[in-house]
Image (cartoon, rainbow, N blue to C red; front, side, top):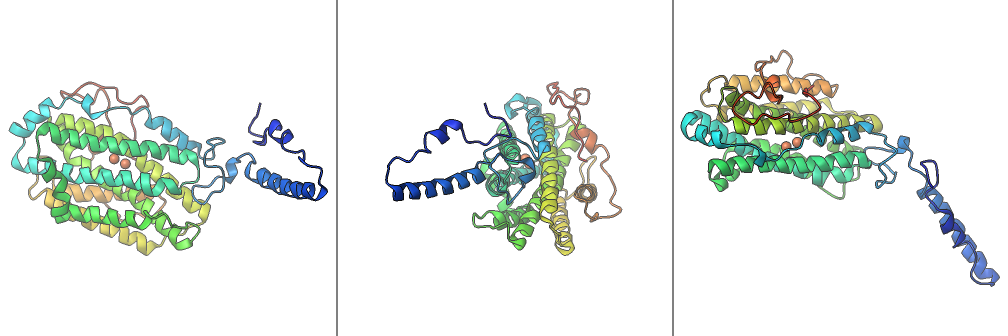
Length: 379
Ligand SMILES: [Fe+2]
Ligand SMILES: [Fe+2]
């Protein structure tokens, strides 16, 4: 019986291989020499994993051994994520079909379709970032396990948008292609693609200071801006409709997605902070400023495209100001200077709306106790 303090080598493997097989002295000596080298290597490589030796990146510990945990919080994220089980086909979309055809104004239909057009592409990007660019660079399995769940959730979110597009009978190819032909959607996708492509390479050496810096900035962008701000802002126009009793099936699905994204954003920010601490990374204030400015400019253009005219309870100014307010939250979580001082929480109902609780779910959708862990906060 082994425990965490034992060497991984079993007694039987030692006794069956120690005796030289011939009586020739020279050969015996060579075998002994070889054996002694092998023993040394085995002792080094088969030492029990020590939690304190684990690293988020550039670690040398056995990636196939889960415990002992260094990042117990990552395992907690995984357990919490598994409380959020749902599939889009659980949601009744009958009322949404009626609302879309008979109750939404042309401006509201424009908002709804373009929110979907942006999100369909965004969630695929989010999935590819975590699954293809980030996971392989992690050197502690507890981090990868949560990220594997995240990959699954991103694909579930894509299913949700596809479910909405299909049930409402929207032209799939047109909606999915929209990010290519609408510059204001394309710009946000392009900014994310640039980050992704800069880290989606197998030859990156994260022991190189510049490469590590770039990887940290990319992960920070995806967690803090792409998921932490743009998804949050991406859902809010639909929550505005949902508050008025419109498109409530879509709204409910987006609440489920928001639950997942709360965790993705918080986990990513925690990982970024851990890498910064373990590797003594200093972020460049100019690069950070540029990131926030680019994100704000892209969001402004997108908002103006989304809301050529305000809809009831939501305007372009609301959208942009809320982006700035949420960006400040993310910066604080990252222990960074707030990029947009004085930004106001103009959509004070948003946090409340985003939380799916039985008593809040009073529209005509299915009554669900969605998550047993209680309400989540974006802070
Ligand atoms: Fe997602
Ligand atoms: Fe996500």
